[in-house]
Length: 563
Ligand code: HEC
Ligand code: HEC
Image 1 (cartoon, rainbow, N blue to C red):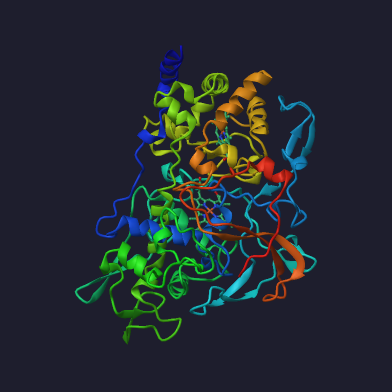
Image 2: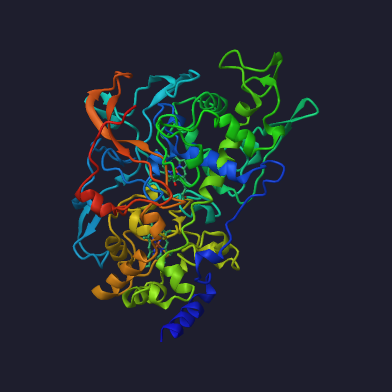
């Protein structure tokens, strides 16, 4: 009986991508010949970049600050923004506020609207400040407060700016042809901006025959690299307004990697480089040494210093004399950053969920209810028209490659909000995002307006919240809905749930909301409430990651970070 079911599922899915174990799907990779010489070192460099709080202008904002929980964000306070209407800053998220659009009959979009809000659950990034300079050896940069929109003020003090879209997970993002909800992180990496366009990028400096040659960059299958060069210079996310790549490079090269964060001795990537009784990597393992191990010498070996535009400075060789003279490595830093973050995030593949095991032939890996849910996913709910294949996304490489059909389903208008509020990739289309580990990555949609998978299933049953062309309402009994939710939860990989390798990570001090008192260093900014996420090694935690709903019931407690 169970064998027959598997055969049936494969035929049902045949006109989209075939549903199969993610272990059978190769990880997309750019051609790094002539650029990279040691992939393992590159992954270590990327992991350090991703988790290092010193990368943010304030010296305490990492990529991981917004992607620490199953690759997504799960902070309880100061996560709301409303691009369209006034709202109260620094609120705690609360179960009762979800879903943001509620109906008297959750199965019908024509029933009475009980509440509606254009609020977004985003991610708190940086304070709005202008960049002045870096101070080599110090994580915090020099900057000054900029006047912010009145919505981002708390009793006259600025709060951390919140993004107007929800943070998606970085896990399995390597399979997306283009990243971001609207796909604006291009498949081709130009070495400098998310757009991928050659015209937006000056190229990198290569050293050959004792002279600089400018080389343009165009790496295919590298959307994660294109993505990574976005937030680092974004003045709402990690950067003060006006910071440049060579300055970020110069700052990080002057600091101990992860110098404020402890690392588990059995960290799957960084363990052997980690100091034992102090934060950061060992004395001999610097950002310069990791870069030199990873990349071909012609990208970093020149003694000739350049200015911010990459022009050689006459008579200037060796160590820079001030923060406006740059080494080759510093000048090439956007490229180095993008490629290293691609390489680390490409290891974040979760392909060992109960569903994968089931599809590999272990018929006991899914319960009967989960199997019913799988069938409903493909037939009653027709979820797999857009969430297709092993990646659960028509926007993945195997989707787009599949005779165009997957490509057409890659970006869809599902009526989460009216088109006028956020047009996405155009006309209200958003990416058919992958669903693996979705149990742990709430709240859902680009708005973060649904707290639970039950709420998401109701959304689909009523054919979306606003007019759209792409969804049809469907009838489902409570038990069919419960099966569908059970199936979605069978897409969780236990290595993600317990943060086992490759999902283990260094310690992280998280800002989790603001106090109504001024920061000691910036008198016009509010000080942070903080929480400390402990380091975890390859064997993971004993306690599973919580769902968003569980977090709402008992939010992370504030505790001082030893900084
Ligand atoms: C302030 C919070 C914040 C920080 C810091 C941040 N991100 Fe994100 N990240 C987001 C948000 C919000 C989105 C979705 C934005 C959108 O689609 O418009 C996102 C999207 C992404 C995606 C795309 C995933 C997908 O499915 O489309 C990746 C990959 C990613 N971030 C990696 C990174 C990396 C690497 C860094 C550091 C260089 C970083 N993020 C820093 C909030 C953040
Ligand atoms: C017509 C294409 C389409 C169909 C059919 C579809 N989805 Fe989606 N799905 C999307 C798109 C597009 C998004 C992103 C929407 C947004 O945020 O605006 C999405 C988002 C989601 C999310 C949120 C993921 C996250 O990380 O926030 C879940 C969960 C989900 N879908 C589950 C389902 C289920 C279950 C079904 C079947 C009942 C289904 N989808 C049917 C296109 C589709």
